[in-house]
Image (cartoon, rainbow, N blue to C red):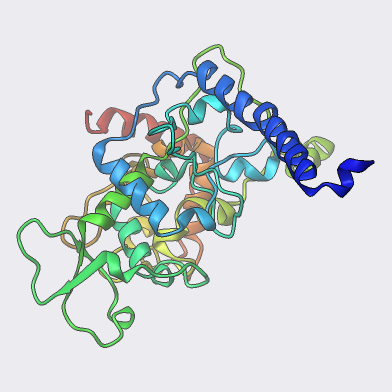
Length: 337
């Protein structure tokens, strides 16, 4: 065929072919989704500060290691309560004909998915310490530190947000670590990432390839399912209180040897898990982990029993029935919004 000997015709045909494919495979479906995917009820657009933080997220290349997409496979249950749907990204509209805001869904999961990080880790103190140097709170982390988002001053000024960084992570520098506005904006954006609950009556998309080893074993033997307190602690508490239960001096309190953990009366401990706690100057504010993660009485009991019997602790265990009653009391005593 003569077309293969005429490079102008060949390249023109190839360009037209790929241009047409691009329109039908990418452009037209995207426009359709944009017009037909409304934001979920309860979702809110980013505030000015959160949008500024989003730009910091982009400029620092966070999307290179973190995804924002919960896939419909069982292993992604860690990152959200349901698989992602198009409406989750409905607020990601174009800024101009030339500039797309980007959904920041990502393609690599070198680090954890961030779809629901605002619920999984709502503590500003934790995020700031983690950004300054991830090894501060996660010794095994391979994430790069972001010290340029902070200043080290001789003395904190009025309005400064101090970051409680252990001395060994300052590498000989002296002074007070203070978060810059860029750091605060980035943390505000991260805290805004929350998976919105679907409207009542709407069936949740299912997770595929379910792993039900514990349930299957229990069904075969007739025994009740025993929750793994160590795994639940790792998913909900370890980021702050550390694997060894020793916390982080000046930032997060230790659970090893804690009077509250060792107390045979679990009322205060359940109250803190459900409603959070503000230790003011001593430590950063603890979020309401139990409420935010929608933990059941059985899950909270498993976590508490792990903490009460680990790292040399030897306290009386609690039962799910005890915890359930105390959870009701905690709800009554929770601060009003």
